[in-house]
Length: 295
Ligand code: ATP
Image (cartoon, rainbow, N blue to C red):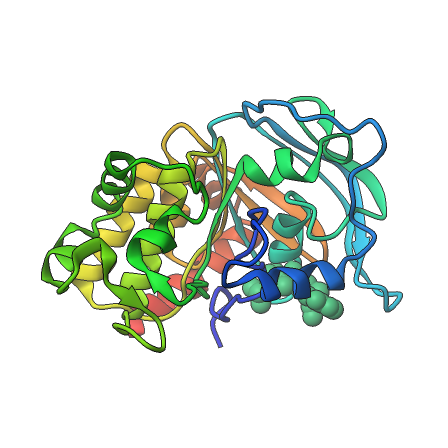
């Protein structure tokens, strides 16, 4: 149907380095097993990043001989929000999943602040990238543990501040044990919107300079939607943000939009500039606006 309209569930929720033994570790290992060749290079270093990301002639395929990314050049300034739009299968998710090195490029390179990301340790790289996606991964445990999972040394005050900024206060107040309420199969079931806010709280706590936002396509009620948008607007502030965008509002508010098509960047610019250019973006935008109007 709609051009922006397919659930994206491919970027793994797991960017953190898990301590052994906690729930979710199996899933992490399953992820690693899909990319066993992604390891630290000899001499890789940990570097604090500001978040200027460059894709230089990036080529990539999933090993079936078909190129998915076919020479992507793109520069994202530190602190900028860049929205990727484009038809389903164009390569938006793939582009974003190369930044935390879920896969490595086949040609070209990706740099952050001038460092080839393969010269950074995985722990350093992934420790400075937050991911919010629609397929939120919660493990069986308390809300507190689920929020703190990006930073196990977090203090009570830090966890509460993150919950507050993610608009989780209301939920926590209504739960019998507050932050210590167990969620998941054996505990309280959270709605899609509540899970998303929990994921947002995680990233507030982790406070990374780089954010990847895989925007939800599923419908939420208006109030929840508004709260999540407000929390996300705050979350993106001061961080380099790559958005796999589905919503018109998000796309319009991005600093810049990159139209991905057939594994390349077809056009880039502000919303107004791209509409004025009367190219692919304008057609995608018209189609998306049509969907929104029909809802
Ligand atoms: P959508 O908006 O529909 O999610 P997208 O622009 O994010 O699309 P990608 O998910 O990056 O596109 O997919 C680009 C191409 O790579 C598609 O042809 C897709 O089928 C293929 N692809 C994606 N993930 C994998 C994978 N894990 N293994 C093999 N092929 C894959």
